[in-house]
Image 1 (cartoon, one colour):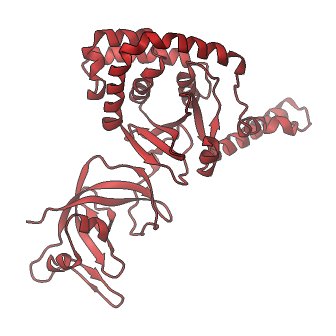
Image 2: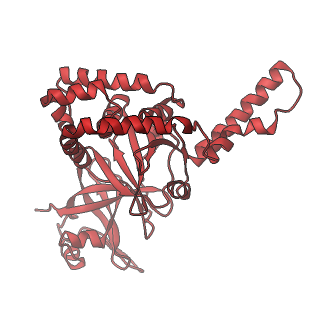
Length: 359
């Protein structure tokens, strides 16, 4: 089921061998395109945690590791234990400075938990009902990688002068493997690994209650959960520094897909409001860019169309636009949060949780 939902959103799952190391193997594959670095990453996270503790830079959500010596010792001895998954994801995001999108199924819907969405680089993983992790890539990335592979084969062929075509089965072998979900399958070790995991479960009972508190805090403070609906992903590892926030005055589609949930507040002044269409735009004080605002969000803040008229707002109609400036009136100012979404044409922003700050 998860494969179909991922494919509906332009994503493909790359299977990782089943076992207690599946999370670290998936992280290694997402970061380095190979699972061979999983043990090194596991050790690096332990060292990173100790260093952050020495520098007193542990975030509040992981503070229990600082106050509970026994818990910290257990993590350092066995970081791959499944109850430490949330800690490992948080530390991975911090150490490698990457945003992590973790996909999973809940109530037959594809959900995504986002860790540290302020980072520009991104890796994507998925988790099944058995707490097994796989890496996730976009279809566009796989197609581009296949094309690059084909070009390299052709250039090598030209250099060594074989003068023959590379067999088709080798040109697209990577895509064929991924599309058929046959990458790194290791069924023979499944029973043995799961048996060992179940044997150790009884020894961890005292640990689970404290770990649940950690996970709950992390979910609330360091990650964001959204439902996915036809959301196209960026290729893994892509530096998004070249992407600029939408500064045009285009309106969103009827059902925008939320990409990022707001965390900080901004301020700005109303640029204009279309009374017939019930939307307008706010100019940010920080960079003078436009942010979409809908009447529904204004009404949630207790602001009606009549209130906007009294405040001297700019109303657009079919025949004219009445600008600010009736007497000495100034455009109304608001504080609000920015929600990033995918609109009808592109990525844009919307003002939510508005509060009027005019004196």
